[in-house]
Length: 233
Image 1 (cartoon, one colour):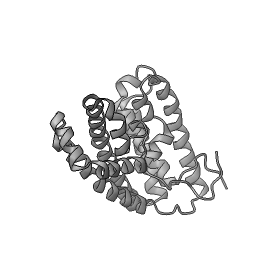
Image 2 (cartoon, rainbow, N blue to C red):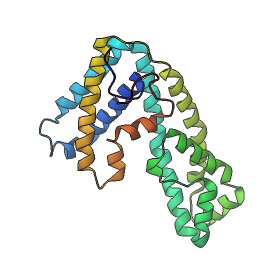
Image 3 (cartoon, rainbow, N blue to C red):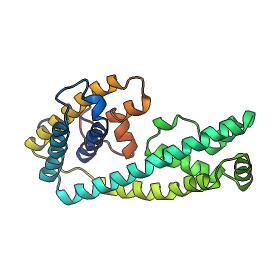
């Protein structure tokens, strides 16, 4: 039996590759300066290749639902991280020597861009629990918008539900044919090649570099992604 070149579930690998190809499309103007064959046609072709593999070997309905759930999580993550960053900066500016202790009490213990879904949910609930009325009053009095604080607290429940839906859909990967594993390996290898080059291009931009780091993309999709019984590549 052909061994997989990746350590995560098949559907997770494909969805991570889809996300990376989407990031590639968004940043194509930068990337195409380094690789002349990285064109819109190339990106569209690779995206179609991933969709076709998912349809042929994993089933269209489940993959469509998983893709929607994954997109929903990504859409929640973006504003949540942005607003958490806004809040953190304002606390640092406004609260002086007390800022470090306040941030720690709210759960800010790691760089925001390094957090996976579980870490982000933990932080959101930390803000929810640690944001007392007294602290909120102090922050608002200093200039922080109360709506910003309220929106961060609201993200916690929304993201938790979206994450749960995503995890249920991932399920357990079925036994696949030699052909399927070969196709999946080819897709993975191609996308990893893109990641290696793009990571070099964005070596001084941690946020964009993380968009082309396969392990970080998978982490943001959530935990329990490991392909059970598969060898480590």
